[in-house]
Length: 245
Image (cartoon, rainbow, N blue to C red; front, side, top):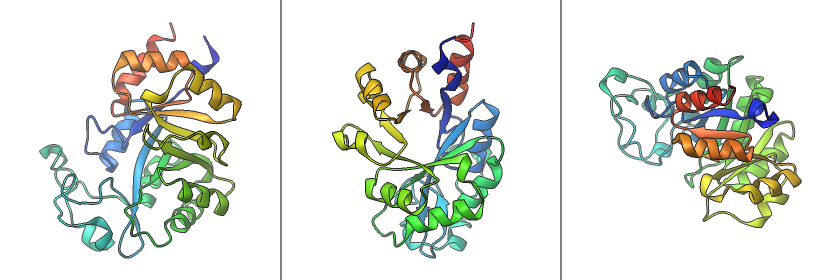
């Protein structure tokens, strides 16, 4: 079996978000059950400087709340239902903190902690680093962001952490290969043999999002990418297993 097949990471996208409400403990739990080795989560800063799992600026799409997340404190956010929008079987699913997500996965799977920027952060890099260190989770996570400056700041604050840039076609630039990060997390449309070769030459891992169809999973596995980020970790687990034979 080619070496890369032994190391390709099955990474849930916001948990197993094809099957459960994104960025909830239910979705993370399901990703673990489905064979994920890691799950990506989105982390934002609240009005009272707490770190919670949530993707959008607005609360409306994936919770019972209204308004903007950064204007709410943790106590307000904990009153929201983050599950019913997806399916009534998840009614009452709470909006989790980063510390709660870490507690759930510790010793089982790793986290890809994506730092989401809504433009009203004060010290989010420091908060993320402090939380990871307080939880002694440095070896069980990577930290990524579309905000290259924030990723660079996290790497400066915590050289021991594995850090990555996230980019799609709009954000892509040659400088990603020379940045002081370990991971390039990119849209599948940018990934071909030349991209992977260039990343390897620069000593970077290639993590690819968001990949939900089996033919594309197989194509990326053939290219030898390091991680595939998917809403359906069960599908990727099936593909990985089928390639063992």
